[in-house]
Image (cartoon, rainbow, N blue to C red; front, side):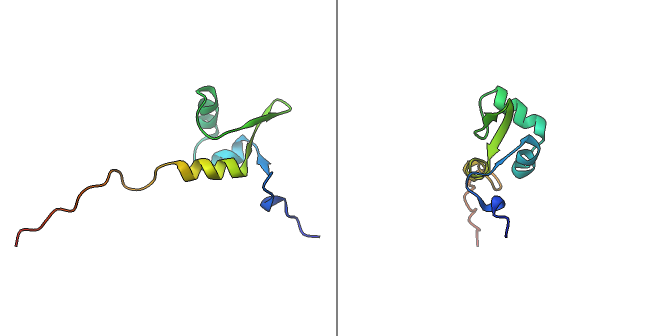
Length: 77
């Protein structure tokens, strides 16, 4: 039998795995939770758990790239 838990839409992970997924320190997730920002989470038995789907959605919503759009400079010929 093959383990399909890694592909389950209801898969939840702890703070350490969520931090690796987001590319931040676990302490950053603590700070975000306190500030009521960052990815959604749920408490399960007093432990904060993150849905893999919520983490992916949060990361997709974050800006990425080299900053603001800069218009191309025209070259004088």
